[in-house]
Length: 162
Image (cartoon, rainbow, N blue to C red; front, side, top):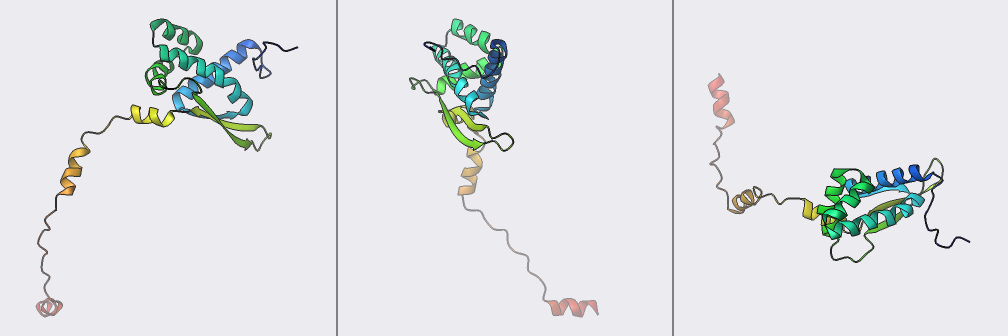
């Protein structure tokens, strides 16, 4: 019986599986959305969501635990400062898996896995341009047209050429 055995093995040894999930999680944190096989996405979901729960704690101890799992300081920083902050009101279910169909080469089922609050993260990460507010005010004011230059009639030019 398989009681209490919920780990998806992905046909890999434990070290290889741990490295795979670590790399997939770092890619998910960096790109906010990755395309992978459905089995890998389903195995990645609990791993990534536990790290977001650590990020929501925000303590130094939680940051060190996340660093032992991910081994990339930049990913841990982004996890704690952007992803966990965007998911602070959510109790669970931080990721979404969208099925894409089969891969052409080997017919493996493919899926996107992404953060549910990805759009909130992008809005929080993008700084508001202060310089863009000034030209808008200038464009709102009516512009004065420069006086048009009068062209000489064509007959006078032809007469002057002779």
